[in-house]
Amino acid sequence: MNAFPTTVSATAAPANKIEVRNPATQETIGTIPNLAAEEIVAAVARARKAQAAWAAATVRERARIFQRFSELLCDQKNEVASVISREAGKPETEALSTEILVVLDTLKYLKDYVPQFLRPEAVPHSNPAMKLKSGTLLREPYGVIGVISPWNYPFSLPSVQTLSALATGNAVVLKPSEFTPFSSLELQRLLRQAGLDPDLLQVITGDGAAGAALLSAEIDKVVFTGSVATGKRVAQAAAARLLPVVLELGGKDPMIVLEDADIDVASSAAVWGAFMNAGQTCLSVERCYVHESIYEKFLSACVAKTGKLRIGNGAEKNTDTGPMIHERQLRIVQSHVDDAIRRGARLLAGGKPLAELGPNFFAPTILADMDHTMTIMREETFGPVLPVRSFTTEDQAVQLANDSEYGLAASVFTNNRKRGEALARRIHAGTVMVNDVIACFGISEAPHGGVKASGIGRTHGRFGLEEMVWPKYVDSDRMPQMKKLWWYGYGPAFGDQMKGFVELLFAKNLINRIQGGIKSTKSYLRRKLL
Ligand code: NAD
Image (cartoon, rainbow, N blue to C red):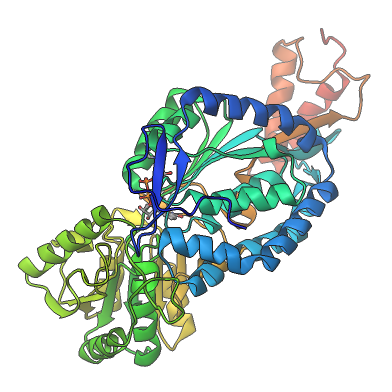
């Protein structure tokens, strides 16, 4: 079933190969080619050739392949979940709920929404001078979309972006993370099995250099998901050739717990939101602000719930939280925790690696009494840490939440939904959830993306589809035999008529509008057009 070798190799992979390891066990689960720039250029050329016929296919023809893919994915969900879990370390349950389910729901959304999205849209005109024209908006596929993906959601992220691109008539060349390529290879395998022309989705494996080579190849747009640092490099490379970009970057998502919130619900949300996928989610709860009146009770509830989490290999059925993807990430987490403690944070749980489980495991950590001088409150930690501080007033909570260079998502917990929704409007983030965390990613209709350093553009939903097409406006004049009034043949009389026309449309006073109308009438009878 799995499209990759499972033999353990003791020797290092040659330079043109990359060894992929299971982050829980350190076992080598396979090797992938580190493709050279020429191979990537050739893949893009093949994609371009195949795209022309795909763009000409009907929406229904494309939908048939997606339907078959959906059935295959549903049938093979356990195998795909195990591939995801093995290379990303997450529990198989999470692979099902946050990856496979998201992709299946996206397929349903695309089936329901894409036909109307791609239908030519009439554009009515209000300008009387343009009334003799009919306007139509068409949505044209870009051509070849380059998708560059991270390792934390190795199946759902590239799949949603790839399927949205394909559904709108594009071809895709996908560069997955070198840490988790096999989930994308599963996507490719199932789409081909469903009948997709192999050139329409090509997974090109390799490290950052392969991503850079994709940017230099003849793609028409890039959808990049990853860190802010790499995102800036991608944006610079794209700017050099005016390549359109979508950038889905990091986050430092705040969670605000108001004094009327249910402490049991909010503490469960905080623990899941901070530790799910070992905290390696762009939408993780990375900062938590709790009203001073419930602060200590909330902390105690979080500590008690964290104590019950089972840490281990994601392949084991009882595991709640798996390992970090690699030791480098673990060292970043440790440095953020150490810096916070040095600056006066109170350590309530965890705070250290769990070396007995393997080199990539870090204990779910709760820190209290945070302030914004601490690195952990400013930079993305991307690990299992819940840093909490108290606030006094709603204004202070909003100010703290907005005091960040990031703006991906945020959450507000309160028993008064109206109050939560009002607060949501004051927070600078692409998504604000009231009484939930992270789950917005599972809503296929909802746009996903951030403001500030969290990125540019959107994926998912209508706005995600708009990123995959360029708008073409077709203006069709209903009077082909008529020269237009505004063409050459200018002179003082025409100047006066135009002044009259402007007054007819926009003068404040009714008398001026009538006079303007009279002055402009003659323009309709102009005979001296060139
Ligand atoms: P990363 O930036 O290190 O790598 C992302 C991808 O870019 C990988 O495929 C990598 O090989 C490739 N790459 C590296 N250098 C490149 C270059 N110069 N040109 C082109 N491609 C290059 O990110 P990561 O560590 O894989 O992922 C974690 C980050 O992703 C976190 O910051 C997280 O918040 C972010 N993320 C954001 C979202 C979102 O939707 N906003 C979702 C998931 C993850």
